[in-house]
Image (cartoon, rainbow, N blue to C red; front, top):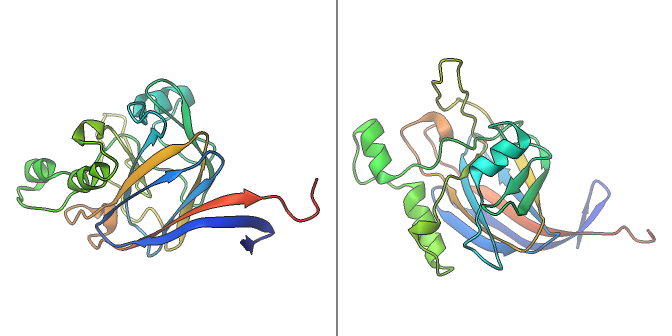
Amino acid sequence: MSEAGGLHRLVVLDEIVPAGKPWGNAVRQGEILRLVDLEGQQAVDFLCFDAADPSDRYNATNTIKVQGNIYIGNDTVLYSDRGAALFTIIADTCGRHDTIYGRCSEANNFLRYGVHDTPSCYANFREILARFKLDERSIVGNVNFFMSVPVLPNGSAGVADGVSQPGSYVELRAERDVLVVLSNCPQLHNPCNGYNPTPIQVVIYKPLAAPGSA
């Protein structure tokens, strides 16, 4: 059990995800998932699913429509295809995160940058999903934490530079048992990682009532 800033919590998991690698785990209802951008400007591609029925997965358009905003941040609820609340963002030191730009893939890297044989978030998602007996059909439009994609009045969009600072974090409360998979983005051809992928920290904890509280 740990205590920080008066908050009592039971840490369930505390891991460092290496630069460019995937990660996945179950997060139980009421638990908090904390993602920390340790060195700053590290995009984290993120998908989540109802653990009881992974066919019901994060839905970007439902999330955007309900909140009326293409960015997500503090107090945003992440909704599934069927309108179930999966996570609520309860803390965010970054400000806003992308919902529209999707993930990098080898095919996309060739179309955009003319390069072959690149590591990608699509490949990372395939790898981590396979550990949970899911496949590429579960790869849908994802959240990009610590990444901002401004949209201009003419509809043009692009990755903003220098969005998150070292130690930036986001915390998400699970509203049901949720399966989370993420790719600590290995992209080297745009500024989402500052052209230098770095590790992130992933923590899952249970909030605990303070001793003596009713």
